Image 1 (cartoon, helix red, strand yellow):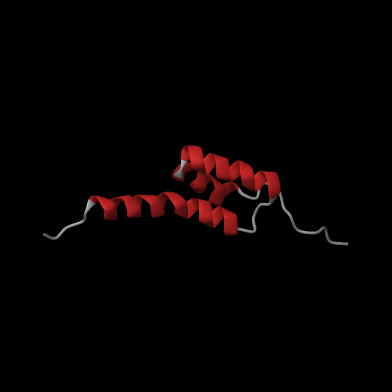
Image 2 (tube, one colour; image 1 turned 90 degrees about the vertical axis):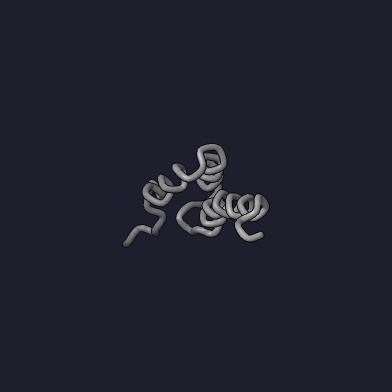
Length: 67
């Protein structure tokens, strides 16, 4: 029989849930405690927190000041 099995659905669901975590971990927008806070938000609030991360992070400019 064809169709998508429960295992395939669980794999897709897992990948969709893990994708924002991987993107935040690999991002250079934030570091340290700020990155940890965003990760915790994504784990507990899921995709909404990831969307906020993409829109709001970094909250401050991390570049070196010009002289």
